[in-house]
Length: 121
Image: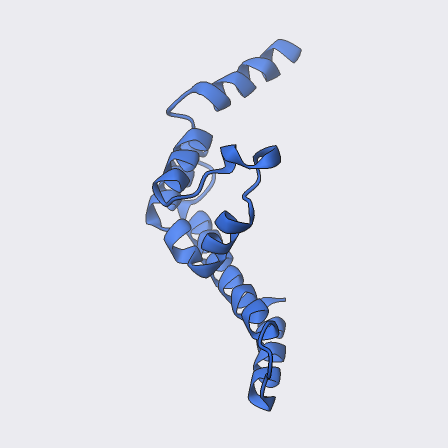
């Protein structure tokens, strides 16, 4: 089993046609690079870019990569729905944190923060 897991890991890491590498290439084409960051995570600059426009990152191309890389039992419509939900959620959280950072929030801003937080949760 150990050899099979190692082969899977190497294939996933080095095969240019693997879904992981296609997704990484897609993100790099959008100006994001997890490889530069500590532990393979997006750093603040890249995370901010994702949060500012998640629809640009989780677009039709990424959905196609995810759909074609999965077994036929996983329906594409569920992956598309998941990407759409992630995009909406990130948009809500981005708005939430942007409103929280305002120096002199109005009553409308306070109400909007509550509504956005409730929607995101």
